[in-house]
Image (cartoon, rainbow over all chains, first blue to last red; front, side, top):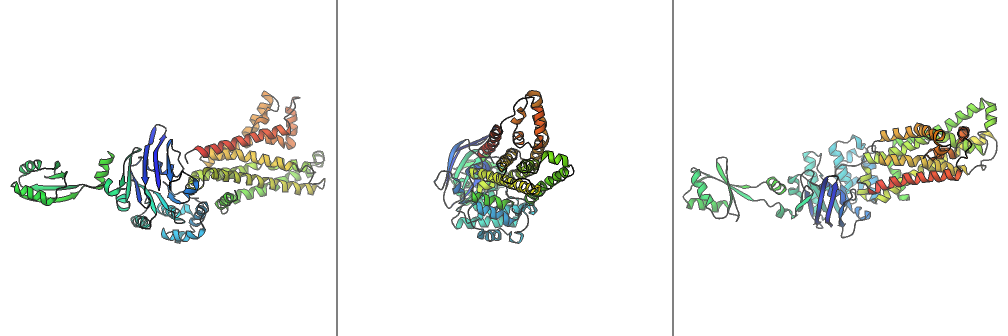
Length: 292
Length: 259
C-alpha cells in the first residue's frame, strides 16, 4: 500500500530521518512508533507531500507519488487544520470539494465523530478534542482506502480515546489500511497489527506487532533461604539474568521455562519456595529497551 | 481552473472580512471620485482647466483617483494568503489532494479575479462620472481599461509576494501599506531628484502610477530636468517585469518549501 525507500530529511543541523525504508501491507493497521522527535511526523509529512525529502523515494498503491493518489487517502497530520471563521460543515465542504467527493458524506462522518450537534458552530469555538474529532471526520470523508493518522487521540478525553480506537479497529476489520503515528505504546498495542519503530530518525525495526513488541516473561521467586536460592538459580540451565528485587529475585530464562518447571527444579534442589509469580515484561520496558 | 476558483469561492463566500473589504472598495472608490468632482465643481476655473471628467480624460482621472484605494484589495489578498499560512490550511489543501501547482494556480486565479473586479469598479465609475460631465463619449480613451488592469495586477502581485513570504498578517499589511503609501513615493522622488530624473519609475508600484499619472503629471514634469520620461510601453514592460518577478518568487516559495 505504501513503500518507503531510503527516505532522508535534514532540518539544518538535525537529521530528522536517516534512510528509512519499510512497506505497509494492504489491510494492516500500521503503527509508526517512536519517542518525541524521532521523525514520525516528518515521515508522514513527506509521504503526503507537505514536506520535501532530501533523498529517497516512496510509492502509494505501487505508483509514483501523484496528487490524485492523495484523494484516496484520508489524513490527519499533526494538528487539525481548518478555516477558523467557518463551521464544521463549511470546512468539510471545502475538504470534500478538494477530494472531489460529494457533500452527501458530511452528515455521516460528523455523526461518527460525535460533532453533528455542533455542526454549525465555528471551528474557533471548538475545544481541542472537538477540533481533533473534526480532523478525524475530515479524514473519513468519502471512505478512503487508506487512513493516515498522526497522534489521532491527542486532546481527546478517555471516552473519546476509546471511541476513536474502536473506530480504527473497526475500519481495520473492514479492510481499510490505517497508518497511525503514536508515541503511546498502549495505543499501538491495542490497535495495530504492524509496527515500525523510529528513534532519532533511524528505523530500529518493523514488522508484525507480536514479533516486534514480543514481551518476555519474568519469574519472581523467593524462599526463606535467599542465599541458597541464589546459588540454585544461578546453576539452573537456561538462566539469562537474575537480579534481586524486593527481598526476592527476578529471573529471566532464554528457553522459556515455566513457573512450574522452576518450582520443580528448586524443590529438587532442596529449596521450598514461599513466593512464585509470573510477570509480563511491560511493553514500555520493551520499548525503552529498543529505543535506548 | 474553474474548479479551483469554485473551491476558493467556498473559502470566502461566508467570510466577513472578504465582504467588508470588497464592499469598502466598491463604495469608497465612487465616494472619493464624487468628492473630487465636488471640489472641482466648487472651483469652476480649475474644473475647466483640468477637464477631469470629460472623455477621454475621465478614464485617467478615475483610474488615478481609484488607484489610491488599490491597497484595500491588496490587504484583502494578504489576509487570504496569511490565513492559509496561519491556519495551515495550505498544508491541508495539499494533504486533501491538491498538487502544489493547483494550490498556486488557485491563488493566481484569485489574484486575477480581484484585478478584474478592481478594473470593473474603476471602469464603471469612469463611465458613470464621464457621462455625468456630458463631454465626449466613453469610447474615447477606452484603452485605459488595460492599464487599469495592469496597475491592479502590480498592486496585487506585491501583496501576493508579501502574503506568501510573511506569516503574520499584521506585519505584512503594515509593510504593504507603508510601502504603497509612503516609502515608495519618497524613495522614487529622491531617486528622481538626486540620481536621475524619471529613474523613480523603476519601482514596482511607481511604474504603474506613472502609466496613469493623473494630475501628478505636473510634478513629473517639474522633476524632468529636460530629460524625456519613459515611454508608456516601457513603463508597462517594467510593470510586467515586477508582476512576473513577484509571482515567480511566490510560486517558487510555495512549490519548494515545507508547508
